Length: 401
Image (cartoon, rainbow, N blue to C red; front, side):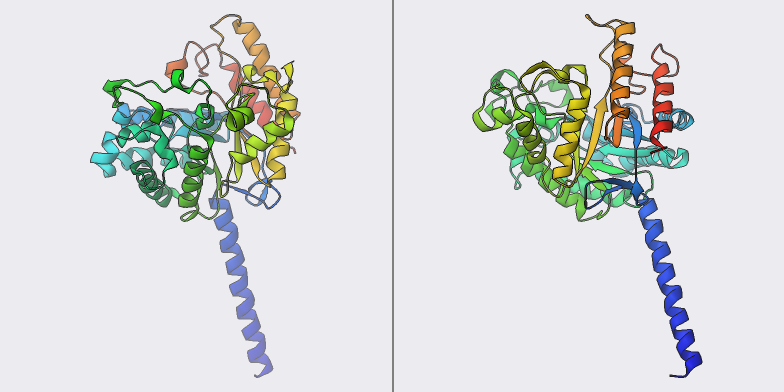
């Protein structure tokens, strides 16, 4: 080859490689959070630290009133306070709230498109939880809750269809940061008093008239569902983090699973349960922490928030996975023994403990949730407004890491 041609050839290769690198960079920037090989949470291929909020019904309020676009103002407020992301329910809570999806999916997704578009326009990330309530989809399919453990069930078939519809539709949106299965399913698993702890069944919401042993959950059933969910997501979206939505394990979760008892777990058993309940391909361990999570744990009357965060972080890192504190917050400030003042002090203590911990990603409970207006909801017009400033300052400090 002529020297000049050779130079042109290599120049062309260089340009192509630069283009591919640029495209890869754009792809990374457009696809939310991912987990490194060592368990670090990355955004734009850099370690990421941030405190968001739970905006639980930003979408589901639309299912009750298709004209309700109050989420637009909500996302604008979050952006104003530099709150980077929101975790939200991305489906119906009760079976009756899935009628629009089943009967007119175009209309259903038009409502969801509006939520995603508003998040994109304000720069607020989303962590959508696709199957919030444990009993909802089995009830919708006319099955018992234990069918989460049966890959051949109608429950699993519906899960696969919905995952395909949602993930395929929004996998290229920069608003989507991670995918979540549901909310706190682990708390319903392996209960020694399962007969007395079955889910409620409001028939007018599409639930069955009775509950029975088929509605009792085990950890194995939940692991089966989590793995199927993760595989369905990963088949479409190879990039984003995937999490369970689980709460922090009960103080006895390991013993519940192994011997169906309420005996207290030690730290090693706590970490083992977290790892067991975050099966591959899930790569983001989920916990929820409120003040009561510190009580009667690890053989002590009360442990520190720092201890909980350290043990959960260690469990995640041992599995080379990230850690997501999907819910944290003060106790309800309208119920004894708490007052507005003591609940606020506890909330501030919790945020301070988070800032002193290695936790990278956390979501405050809860923003603009009318159902908890009297107890926990934070808006710009109620007495809890100050939490928005607390989160803004926390994110300012986290950005310096």
